[in-house]
Length: 169
Figure 1 (cartoon, helix red, strand yellow):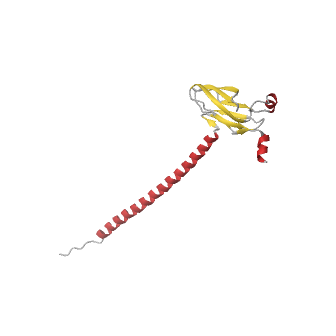
Figure 2: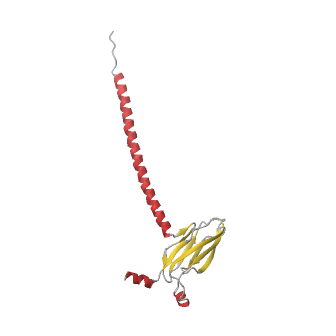
Figure 3: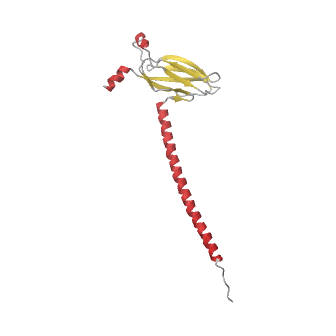
């Protein structure tokens, strides 16, 4: 008895074997691509985190409140912006000079409008009226919440143009 085996029986296992090998190769390539994409995403996340830490280190914002610059000179205007303040949050914003004295206060209330407050920390007339006052140095903006969220202070510097020019020379 002579049985002839058709050639197709040999071809089918070869095709199946080739498909399995191809599947393994593609799976490995896909996994390596995902790993490299994941490491790239981690690098981007680290960059974003570093930028966030830098922003926090600059301390230009606290919750919904922000200032535009971290240092001001004589007769410069500081803008304090507060937007999307929670409805239940209200209190007093206190501006504190480097000598610890309160310069002024401003209310905030989330149930009302946004805060858009501007003032000049040191004007030429301030220097004439109070020559012994300590205007130059690090100021603090503190938030005293009566209800709702609490916010960290925001710090900024007031510099004398004369002292900065002396440092440059």
